[in-house]
Every structure is written in C-alpha cells, then in structure tokens.
Image 1 (tube, rainbow, N blue to C red):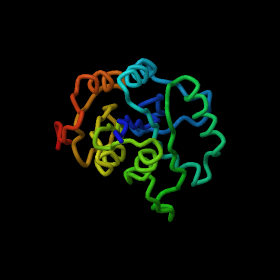
Image 2 (image 1 turned 90 degrees about the vertical axis):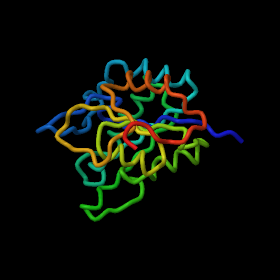
Image 3 (image 1 turned 30 degrees about the vertical axis):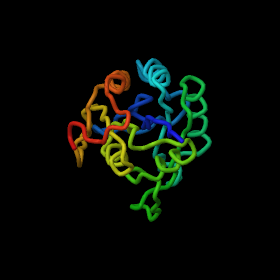
Image 4 (image 1 turned 120 degrees about the horizontal axis):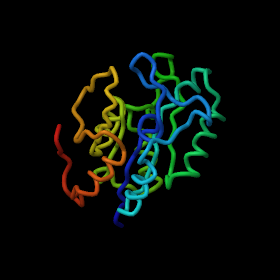
Length: 191
C-alpha cells in the first residue's frame, strides 16, 4: 500500500495572524480575533491540488492552564475548517512540563504528527512540517519530516536550522511544489 504525503501546519503564525507581545507570538483568544493570513487559502488549495493531506498541529496549553476555554479553541478550529481544506486538526491541550503536565504530543514532541500519520496513512519521510517557532521545527525533525520555517523575526533562536526558510505559507507551498521528494531521503539546507 502506497502511503500518503502530508503537510503538517502549525496554526498561530502559519494559518492565522498571531498576537505579538514583547516580540513573542500568542494565539488568538476569540473567534473574532482569528484572522487567516494573506495567501493561506491559495497555499492550502495549491498543496491539496499537489496531492498533500493537510494537518494542523497546534499546542494550546492555555486550556490546560485554565486561561482559555476548550470550547473557544474548538470554535476557532470550526471557523478555520469552514474556510480552508484542512483534512485533520490535532491539538495538544496539556499545560506543559513546566506546569507538571508532561506528554508526548506537545511540540516539540512528535506525538501529534505520529497520531495523524497513523489515522491518515501518511509517510512522514515524504512529508513537511511548516512552523514559525523553534518547537515546530524540532517537532518536524523528531518525526522525520522535512522542515520549513516561516521567519517572523521573533525574539527566539532556533536550536537546529530548518531544511528551508520562507516568509509565509504561500512561499512554502510554492517551494514544496518545486521540490522533488518522491522517495528521496531527507536532507535539505540545514541538515
């Protein structure tokens, strides 16, 4: 059985505009604050036409920390799914190890990618992880995907260089379309 290829997308900063406070990105807190970034609809459409399954993988630790209701996150995802051809959404609601809640799904752990890959029969070695934070790039590396970093110039340093760096999701989609990844081993710029 031939496995599918996928593009795993972080949510805040990749799909929607993050809230920036002191040089750090934060998620939308309401459906009204959820603003899909320019070019995202076109990028998702192009990736689907190229045969990729699209999976949003997002840490939402504010739910586990009690500062954001799960229903709000679910309403945001419902809105997102109405506008974009997303095949699956994986969410980690855990507060994080620093709050005494360790898990294998919170990025940079690859648990969400492994879970989606199992359900959707995705070959991770033929797939991409696109994110705007260190934890996204580490997650993709930990899962065996190629990594694409959207550089928003946050005040956060990367631990490892991504395979590719772009300015937005539309540029990432165009890059993916130009790459020949059929059964080629991983190893782009940075590895």
